[in-house]
Image (cartoon, rainbow, N blue to C red):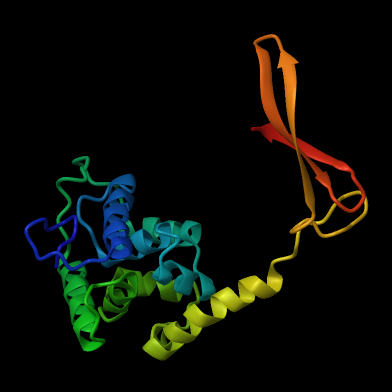
Length: 216
């Protein structure tokens, strides 16, 4: 598996999984730890807040700040030798977690290893990450179930629908009319210290109230 910790491995990580592993190294360095454990893989996933694994963890009640606190408690004192991003070997359990991630990817017939596969690999190894999640009150069985293909598929279709239902149209502050398709545009020339320039002035097409200007 090609990740920032093993540059000679095959290239089979997607962008989110790769970014999560890069962030895992950053998290370990920030904590003064010279080795990458399952707990740092967990933090890397959480830090990559746009990836699916981070959203699944968020739905389970896990925040990056809380997880960092628990990892710091479990990690003990900082390493005597300051670590660097180029010298951060994995622990045996972290290595197994990433190998399991590859297996999950193959089992689900995915062409790449995703952030969800990495999280499944972390959960499949009894390491510090699991201890941290339990201390945060996470229902581990429910978390694993939320990473099943059916649950992920339902999640991907539900998100756009929820956004469509909650997206409220912009409204004019004067008359309350919807502005989505009712904005009058005026192309104007104004004169200033640097000479004349063109601007666009926006107004409500319903009541004519002035809304603002922007450079043309």
